[in-house]
Image (tube, rainbow, N blue to C red; front, side, top):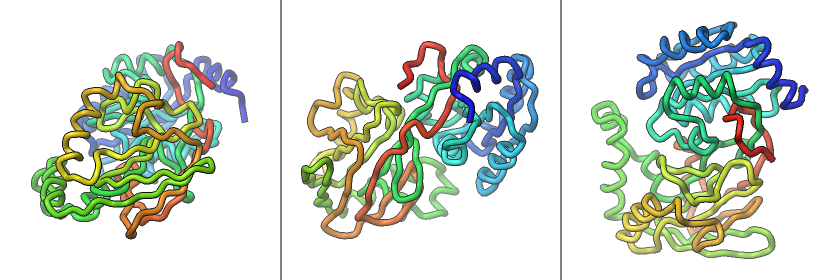
Length: 309
């Protein structure tokens, strides 16, 4: 496999790429043509270009694009699209280019990709190849987070009809309905020879630096060989709402050394009763689970001044 520098030189010199845009994501359909035309204008030869209208076809189209042998695979969409592309490209001699077209764009924010389409394409022409960590739960890689508690219950229990009628609003509506009778979890986290106990309605284990479009802490990122485990609130239901608002407002001023954050390389997590688990917004299984890291698993095109370990 080429070095990052060699791959970056090939991208800048040959300008051969493939494009996959989730046209089902927010703004995806209307921005597909804009993304394609901007890449061509930037001098890229597109070996293939795929607007994906049906979510079930996304992984297949990404695989087809990768099989064309581009130096750069450009994926446009939200965190689900980017996460699917990241799993496909892990440890491959292809760099992932990000066009953040979703709602929260957590991974794009983590790796400092501009949310403006022209600026994001600019990174693909003037940036450099870096590698970042992916999280690992079981055999599944992830970009952003693992959620245990209310967030997974919401994924499990949101009625399909409500999603069809209200779209993304179905999730907070379901969360509020579930919270009135939701029982807190007693979670035990074992890591690096120590045991930590949390009682909360919601726990996260993050690989990236953003959640819900806001910083988790000022120093969390996806290239530090660390996972960040933290509860949101304690056993009281009102604490979950209060801490959710606090985290959104103050994350940029907090550090990994502050309570209640636990920064470790890997961990074992179990709960007082089996609890559903969601990984980057998709249902995965139940606790107990082991969560670790796949260091420097993914190569991406990032801004030229990006740090790289």
